[in-house]
Length: 210
Ligand code: B1M
Image 1 (cartoon, rainbow, N blue to C red):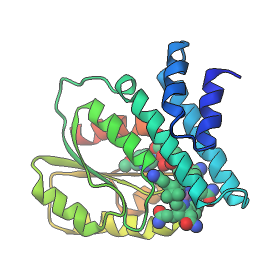
Image 2: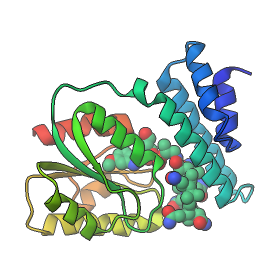
Image 3: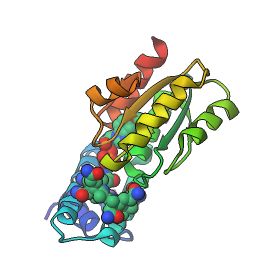
Image 4: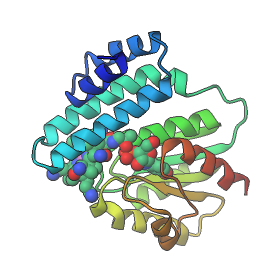
């Protein structure tokens, strides 16, 4: 079995203690950090499919999430470069009712490496908490909302609409997460949408420069 396959298998199995070492070994063998990340994302898809079929449960999803997060920690210095420019401040969070944070953390990481000062509000973030963070931090020119559940899409809508109706200005709103589409982003009044962390950083730069 290749090292990258071992990483994949151990993320699926939720072996958080083994994954960091295996990720390092996969890197040492010459695998690209991006390929190892994609393998781990694919593992989460496998775990999600098993959950859908009733072959895995919430604890298994949680263990795999922990294992993947530990693996990402090893990759982080390689996925992010030092940015010399400052693009402003981004407030990011997973919308209210939603506890999924791996995708949001990847987006935060890519935004930071693109040159944003990132204020990460974590998960289950209400519209009011987003608003408060815009007021409390200087130069907020981007708000990034992540959501993974179809059931929390209404809170993403509420967040975007609350931000837009707040009277506060000077920031753009970008949304993303597995159930989010460009059509939905347009419909709820977001300024931008991205399907993955890499394109979120590209879109974010476009938005704040526009
Ligand atoms: Co949950 N979960 N989960 N879960 N979970 C999913 C999302 C699900 C698809 C699994 C399934 O049924 N196949 C399903 C949602 C179904 C739906 O709504 N249609 C689901 C469910 C149902 C649930 C619960 C309701 C289960 C229950 O309790 N009965 C529950 C809800 C809890 C809550 O949030 N209130 C729940 C709980 C959990 C755990 C807590 C156990 C755990 C999360 C732990 C954590 O995040 N720390 C978990 C996990 C791990 C998953 C799966 C298996 C993996 C998610 C993940 O991290 N993927 C997931 C199945 C799947 O994704 N296939 C599943 C990897 C990550 C890199 O991808 O987050 O999509 P993702 O991020 C991507 C893009 O979406 C994008 O960039 C990333 C890639 O570069 N992106 C953005 C994300 N945010 C962005 C923001 C942007 C731009 C792009 O701009 C701002």
